[in-house]
Image 1 (cartoon, rainbow, N blue to C red):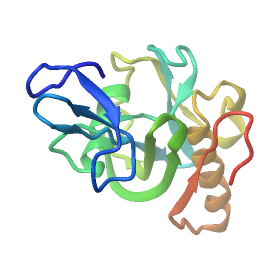
Image 2: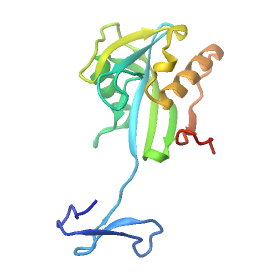
Image 3: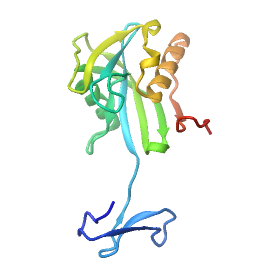
Length: 182
């Protein structure tokens, strides 16, 4: 950040009085510009024994498979964001949402939240951000072609939990690539 969104004057990075973190602070109007993590909301859309995945038509990870998910917008709940993203990316309508995984990704300032959800019907198609969408049995999941580790973790949990018929809410943090989990 170079300039204040309030007055347009230059900002500097410093620890404001009473704070403990570096922030961008306007040298002219003293506005403190807080930067907070983004929330990614999505679903594990289920039809019988199958899960709906989307092949990404956009970067990052163009051409890789993912669960339908995306950034939460202002003015919506996390559940509404998950439903909207599922509709946008897979043209799929879901119901019976139940929060399932909450995965912190602190090295990129994100929190990924996935809900288990039932597909309302088989009327789905690739949205503008997807090359294709497809239902997969566990044995056919393209594990080596998944776009994000949070998606892989969520699917691993889902299939293991389905065998036990118990779906606890899962929470964890994902370290940067190449670093062990804390």
